[in-house]
Image (cartoon, rainbow over all chains, first blue to last red):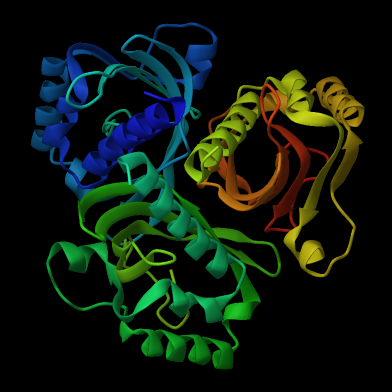
Length: 157
Length: 157
Length: 157
């Protein structure tokens, strides 16, 4: 796979991931990850200081599924919509079927009344397994620029 | 055409489209569409409820040209500038020369005084004809996340 | 190099450039330019009127390095973080090893307290030299949509 083709595969994964969240297809969210995985939301401040304290952490597809169930039960998620705007991905490293990539992201939240706000901005630091039917996230670290993030509403980013 | 090349062609079309609008080259806008086409701006709410009530609708290049003339006569469009930020496109489907693709978009409006606001965010749902000299939109559905959109100013999105 | 491969190379340069600035690796910033170069920040208004008055101008790597030193001494830059969101690049022209490309950009600033604001939006107009080990900017014109830009804080955009 050429560098340009790899770029295409990785950006396509990111776009499919974002579309699933924006379309409120939360139940599909865990399927973007490997069975044993690492998903973490952390502030830029803690990430830079190497403090392991995150806003949310999961290390298996099952934990991600639990999170989806909680969000559905809390019934909070439905009151607003999200829109991801992604910057082109920067592939940092590749060895065999493992790829490391960074993607700047921005999420705009729209309430039912129509108010739009910048909900979150930051960077995805991803370790991706290619070579299967579709690429999967083995690790997704969501580094939020702002420390002000509503943990109650900590929807998948 | 490989999947990666198709991606390139579609993203290039979207980028040229956005640049024409941002550069205020409105007269070129209809040329991005097939002669018989479908261009619609609709809120996410109505789209999800399958209500056909849109903010703007056109089904020919001629109607798009009429819209440009109205905007020029109203002389409203010139008082501010727009900037599209697009997320990488997600190609959903392809058969022969027809492609269906989704693109998350965001439009920032800047007034002459310099105030910047998030004017619109949402998703393009496009049906694109490839195979000609340049790809063209046979259908462009602009699904706006917010219902609060100034219909008077409904500039092309 | 095919058009799709060129697109990949140019977008990768833009992504690396944005990542260096967002990661506060300012000292690497001059290395994205040719030795004799042209870097200018200008408002859209002045650009459209062909007024050569810019917010910042440099025509060598050395001047860019001086700028980095000033920003480090002023110690202002560290008080906030920046996040670039780029729209897919539009390659406009290519002849031999020279490429002209446009990229819509948006920069979100996050203060240490966690407040996020849209700091700048606009367009990069780039002349890029390919053919070397990595592509380099021979010219980067940053056209800001808003005239309201804090010149004291005029960090690299």
